[in-house]
Amino acid sequence: MKTSQETTTRCPFTDCQSNLANIPGRIIAHSRIKTRNGWKRRRLCKVCGKTFTQSTGTVYHRLRRPKADFDRAAQMQSEGVSKAAIARVICASPSTVGRWLERAGKHAQAFHEEHSRIEDPVEFQLDELRCKGVGSARHAWAYIGIEVWSRMWVGLHVANRTLRATYLFVKQIAGAIGDRWIPVLVTSDGFKYYEPVMTRVFGRTNLVYVQVKNRYAARGIARTTSRQILGTPRALEYA
Image 1 (cartoon, rainbow, N blue to C red):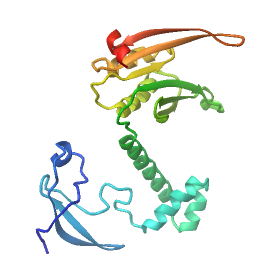
Image 2 (image 1 turned 90 degrees about the vertical axis):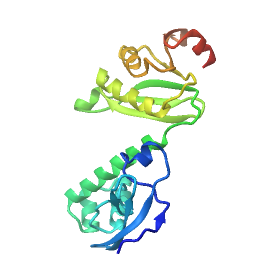
Image 3 (image 1 turned 60 degrees about the vertical axis):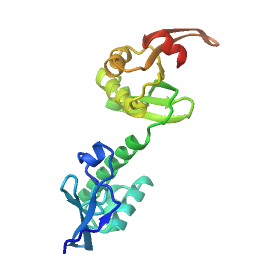
Image 4 (image 1 turned 45 degrees about the vertical axis):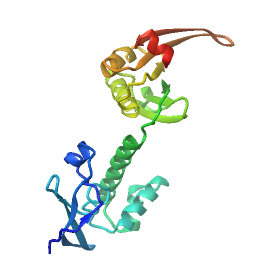
């Protein structure tokens, strides 16, 4: 039976105008549906007209097994247990466990991208580290980014040192920086793909980008030079 009782739940659909315009949603109780795990309350968003349940937009959406089984599978995977062993413990097929873990990884990545933004970033440092691997992974590199003042890791991408890999990594950094009018300083080494990618991603923003090159001697760094690529000298001085 439909009711008009309003709740404070926000609409889980990202394309809803209540989320795009950041306005209070109008969510009302709509009906009840019967599932394998019991009855669930369905709600209606009066802004976009879509109905949803409490699990919509979460990692448990349309899960045909108890939530405890999913949580146990994710915990065992984090402890290094194989998919076959997890499947035997929770009495499920290995393919089902694989789909669960893939879903958990996507939601974890989305959560990280949503909550890894820093309110007042000051300086970001970008670097690449050579990874030890076998076969095709022998040439892999780890792109890493850190916000210096907060010591927060804001980006990680493992791939070969290609133009596309550099672009995907810089897009992660762009998501952490967000839309800001205050100049933010970003520094990196002189890797050849950084300049075209940074210009493409941040060319029309107020970001200050500087490449730092170190010349090494037997006892350490002998000389350091820098070159400003994006931003004005005044913005660099402010940053």
